[in-house]
Length: 99
Image (cartoon, rainbow, N blue to C red):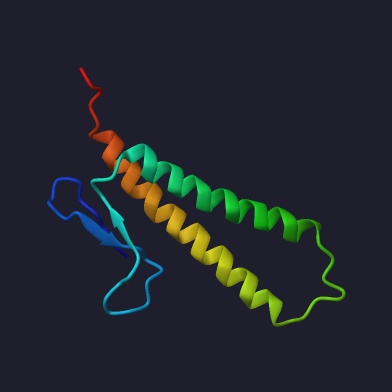
């Protein structure tokens, strides 16, 4: 698990969902915390909306192969959202209002 310390000078941290040695998806820890928060909320909302849809859907005519596809999408959206929320929270805890 990636642990970002806001007191270090690490600018780019990889998302936990990266599965490669050179992660293509990163979080810019120096981005505006509000933008990071919005990106997190966007992913968590999409995950929540998908779960709501699944709650209302009947799987009688569905394919058993759909379940891993859906859970994988939910995992990616939720994990990326949590990674972004962690950075936004740590950034905002050290944030000072403009004078």
